[in-house]
Amino acid sequence: MLGRLVDVSTEDKVKLHGFLSSASQGTSAVWMIVHGVNGNFYGSTLLRDLAAALCEYGHDALLVNTRGHDLATFGSSDQPQRMGSMFETIDDAQLDLEAWVRFCKDLGYTNVGCIAHSLGAVKVTYALANQATGGLSHLIALSPPRLNTELLLGDPVKREVFDQHLQEAKQWCDKGFGHHIMRVRFPLANLLSAATFLDKYGSGDKYDYFAYWSKIQTPTYWVFGQQEVREGSVNFRDVDKYLTQAFETQGARAHELTLIDHADHSYRTCRRELTRSISTWIDRSVGTP
Image (cartoon, rainbow, N blue to C red; front, top):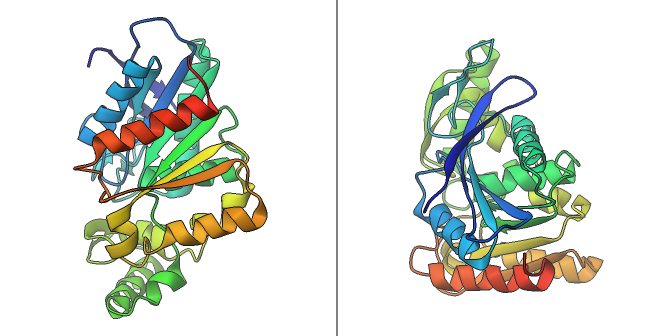
């Protein structure tokens, strides 16, 4: 996929990189593509496949990093700081998204959409609910997990493990060692600082889209894999059913949801079905570029 490396600086002076790929013909439409936890703009075959499909469809694609990219990075701002998924605060991603939207507008794009995967989808939906990225015209939210403390504490198998992580993180933060790295086993095996664990998983329903989706006025296409919502962990289990019911009950015209048959969280064996579903929704909701 041809394109060029680009970069932006956020309002708080964090430098982020991305990759802009243009369709063969000129277009005023671009789709920002946002990675999930531990990810980046170049490492995911899912995101690259989506970018390629968008360009074939006639739209430009902008693969972007947030400050939570990769496991750990070192910020290049005037005040050096630990960054990456081990140290990120989800709320801060609003500054990253604002910078990328502004970048697109400065390039002359009049229609800026977004496709975000996993934790990236949580970041974008949260930002939209807070009206922090008003420049986005459409959103495709791929497989966002529910980040809800009580929900995770209610897991019938892993609740004791999660509670142990929660207590450990609180103890480290109380001692003033929020940057202490924990080896986490649930809800996702990972390495996280104590402060980041509490931000993601110990903030009640602050980042749970069930609590804020109705504030999102931007047309949004929610996409999940059948395997993750039927066989996955508690923060994915049957979310499609609950969201669909909520959309119908509240008459949420801006929101639509689909399930990709046989797909897992990364849509490994269902890329064609996924891109077909997305292109159909774009054609219906956005139109051709």
